[in-house]
Image (cartoon, rainbow, N blue to C red; front, side, top):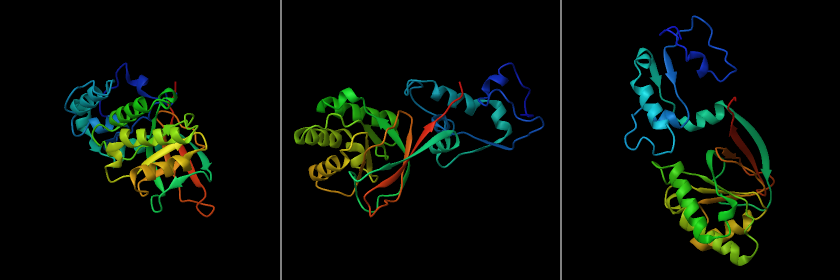
Length: 246
């Protein structure tokens, strides 16, 4: 970068097919995005393997590296969202008439997807545990932050099954539902309206849940849900997927 000499590992850090920055560039500030950005400044404290990877150690190494003291460090307002918008593939879909949402909650953007294993959907106790565990793993420092639970909906085959699922979601996502932000539920099957209505009845309120369907997502995705269209019968959806070069 013109600030320190390049070493043998320099070429390996590029993800754009190995093309380095043009010679002579001297940046005055750098910024970081993604999960590691939240571990650089302020420095991470606690178990360095809390997230099951080297993220905290990498953040600490960046914070302590003398090379980064030669430039300013700009902290992004939305570190995770910056990664998604800056290095992602966006797919646009429409979630149809079998949806349920409270007026005033939409549009909503950059909501992280929390995928729930399909095999857990048929077992209420396991579903509760999986939801709680995965939300805590995604947002350990902000357990009441907005997330989008992604389920196939394959277990919603009867009224009783819908009620069991609604109760499991309520219990598993208690941290989110007890906070100031809405809970988003994304189903692959066309059962969002009945599940959303059951959740509202189960909880005695209808103002903090968005339930949409006919949308496929994956681990690591983020979702935007736009302003309702078609007299409120459908919503535009953008699924954002991170892309990394091999």
